[in-house]
Amino acid sequence: MDIPYIVIDQLTPDQQQVWKTYFGDADRPRYIEEGIWRRTQERATADQSGWTAADDARRRIIHYRYRYGLVPTTAAPAIGLTDLYLYHSATAPADEIDAHHDALWDSLATGGWKEAPGGFLWTRRDLKCRITEHDAHPQDKAAGRTLPVGYRSLDVQIASVSYAPPPAVRQLPWNVLSTGIRCKDRPGTPTRVPDLSVLADLLPFQVEIGCGTSVEAGIPPLHRLHEIYRVTDRQGHEPREHRFTLSPTADTLLHELLAEPEEKTAEFVEMFRACFLAEPTPAMWAPRELMDARQFRRPGHHQQLRRARGARRARRVLHTPIRPGRTRRRVGRRRQGPPRRRPAPRPRQDPGPRRRPRHAGRLPGPGGSLARRPVYAVPAGRTPGRRPGGQPPAKRRPPSSTC
Image (cartoon, rainbow, N blue to C red; front, side):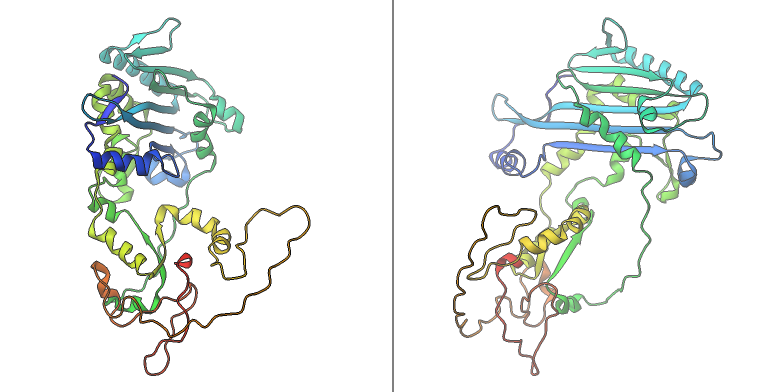
């Protein structure tokens, strides 16, 4: 297989601008796609892992990391996969590891891989494959984990020839394994309302959106990745019917990649390709319109919830509006030297007559049904109040930095 592997060929000028804005000059490396799955056989996962006794300790770890970039072509640049890295670690009884080892050799021969001098390393054009077998895995020794007698591990690393994973990347899946099993949250008791107009009494608020809007835009759901990387053997739509793929003899991921790298790589880049080509839907534009109308405090996504909670204090301080005669506080930094003198406070100016709200009555666009009477933006954390007679309290509109 050739690297770079073309993902989207002949970008239009608009697509080139999208890449430059959201990938080339972005605040984080969106050109990196990465995922980790670790599945273990233990009592807590008995329903899905098939655990029955203490000597059931099979384990499967998958870590992939892809890097994308612009690739020059004859007419227009293309988006290509410039770095490929896939790590697969299987731990199972010795007889299953031996069968797994033999199956890998057959797949290497089917795919036309060539063994490098010294053994345990194979190449196929711009790809390389390294196989390492362990009686006791070094990561288990370092962490003090013990496995039942007769268990062995087999690691397979497939990467582009020019890519050498740094130690931090190689260690990442084992750090995830050390965190233990993720505890599932219990369902709450939400209140269902027949009419969304009651939300107007709660403005402004933060909105967290799940994957439904992405699926509507043509982006595959998460279980599509489970199918591509053979994480589970889906027997139905119920979660309890999604059994973990733990037996190496039943794992077809490596065979598919080694036998036909080009075909399997097309599945690997499917998610990135769909995300880049997706267009915003009306459900995505509605929160934007309400955000512009200062009805939402800040945009949100369910994946950002944990990070947002951890930075709650910093956000509360850093997003404090600047008033005349005051300066913005900084978190975690202390000025050295003598204290500064505070400037003298300026006299407060009369704000003048209150202006009519920008969006009185119905809001434009898909979110118009949320407000059926004049809605006034208020500082976050304060319940919108009304005077007798339906008149809003005489308070100034908060600055845009608080919305």
